Length: 49
Ligand SMILES: [Zn+2]
Image 1 (cartoon, rainbow, N blue to C red):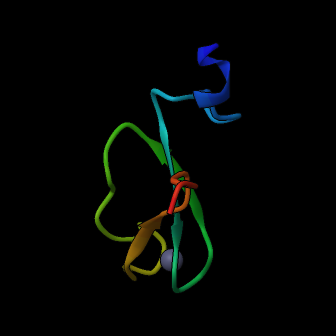
Image 2: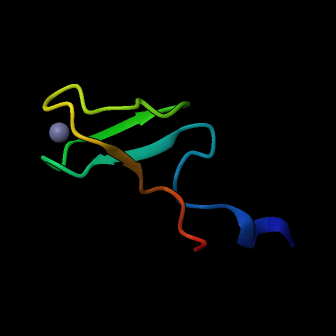
Image 3: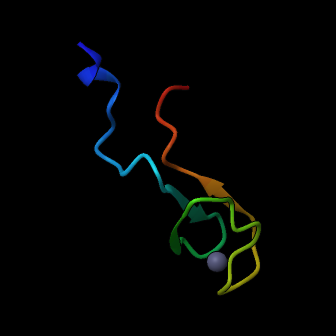
């Protein structure tokens, strides 16, 4: 059963959150910096840490 490996997120897009203002972004690649405040953006879609 491979179903346990499927996340609630769309696997084709990652979810990122700005560490500065909390803005959330979706995209296939890391945006680098927040478009709102230019702070660092982290990937929050990865849940297996
Ligand atoms: Zn920001």
